[in-house]
Image (cartoon, each protein chain N blue to C red):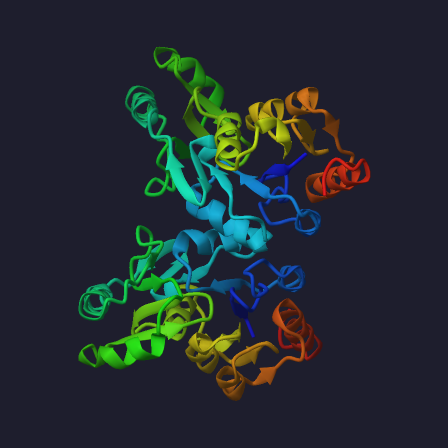
Length: 224
Length: 224
């Protein structure tokens, strides 16, 4: 394997979103590039990458934004997301509260204070859009964009294939990324759905799971 | 002491801006609020506060932005900074490169690729403006704003006095913050100028220095 792509919230952080230093130690021990993949906006993803001490190559907004030297925004579906957002607010009084609206350019991030399942059912008029709850935030996003499409694009920009990556995550929104990668890891605290499609499920949770996977792959000679 | 305010780059991070987990451990062990004070933009400051696991109360843009539940931007001097920036670019071909221009609202951040001393000399026509090199970025900023003014304001918002804070930093742009605080700490790698005005200079560098100061103040019963 030639690189690692790793989710942030819940995977290299604890539930309260504070960094798990066991993950930091494991990721810094690698000589292959480590790509951060998050639902956060680019500005946060960059800060995270700096603090973790990784390459500065990032996937942000759940795949809508990638940065490898230069930044690419996939804004093609933002209008559709805005329409779905307005539909829910205007017709059903959802009173949705946007997160980082001034920085989020390819999807809509929302505070987790409403009935996501009901909202998804109501969105049948917008078949291209889905609402995803990562456990940390809710996203109104295009079905055409996910961390898997982000991984494909960042791999291209790095001169690699998605199959060259180890992918590590905890949430259903990491599924496409794990499936496209060469080796998918679900940390011990991951959603059952993600565990079901992973090549490896770690015993350890959060950063301990990341460290466990890195250790395993190093011992197998799969990564360095 | 009732709270701590701590610089980021060079203080809780290493030279490469990656987080020093020794600082993280020490800061998380405190029950008083920990305020992050940085030259970074608000979006980065928030991400840093989350990852460090602190209160979410932040001072950003070297004091120009403070957040404690709500955000305050001191944009009063931005025009002056822009004028100084244009003056250097137009008259002296400095070719200055802005950092995070879309998110920086109260001062100008610049890549460290020009002669800061010469630029400062040329700016005599703009007596309200100064150019500060933190070792990580260069800032064109108003002399009316610094981390000390930021600390005063955040203390007010928290119902405290600046004197209630322990302040920890490494760079001359932390000086006003240390001076206004009740107890100023310079980490071992700090600039001599900052060490000169600090109440305590730690032996340890970066996160080890932060941990040393926290340990010392706990043992003295000054903080918990």
